[in-house]
Length: 293
Image 1 (cartoon, rainbow, N blue to C red):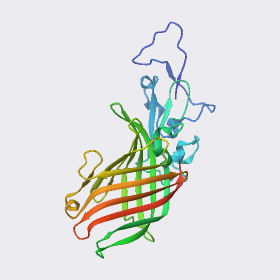
Image 2: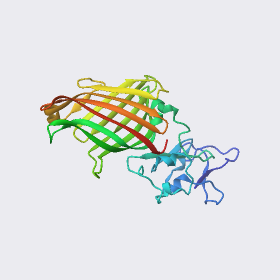
Image 3: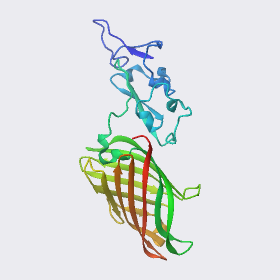
Image 4: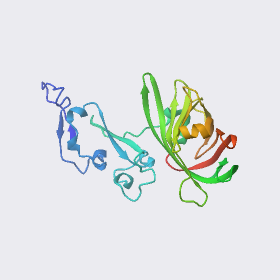
């Protein structure tokens, strides 16, 4: 590994090759756990010049639990049996080490930057879901009970000029009771714009529909709502050609209530259906945190 050492008096710095004199040393049993090594990245591959006053970020697929005090021997980082369902390609969390003579994990010290979304961080499950929608097989509106799993991993900030967004990368799957194949999935992001006081939800479903919904709220709110309307150039809805002609989504609303280790939502998707007319497709569920947060 590399260690920063004191430069002899009078020795000039070479800003291009080794601005802070970094020397390669052999690991000592007294050294703190090396996050680079435990992530499977050879320290030799890191150029000393790039290590000057910088954070070397290592993308490590890990469970959200790993962000909270994981030790150097934790199997969640080494691919052992403790790896969770969050250990998936889309759940990449930054692991960092700063070459300034100190060692630390770049875990976020708190979640306040995520504002109202902070209470949604983690992995969630709920089996009290209720879907009310038009069923093509029967030609009528009917209820479907379902169970659901959601993962929400924090990231940010993302800078759009002076705008900074903190977000949750989320994946959602829902199964009808007693079925093993998911009948609904979503991929997307929850985003928080602190300066604007806006919470956003942008997501896609594999039917060829995308939604960007938004609403105003405060950083410490535990209840908030978002809305999208077809035709809007900001918070809007897009459908593929087939759905636009036969089952066009014209409005989407969602209310979220976060309460400790549980959160609930109640959503309504307005669909202009070629057969059933205007349909209010509703979904609601209460989920419990099973990991993270």
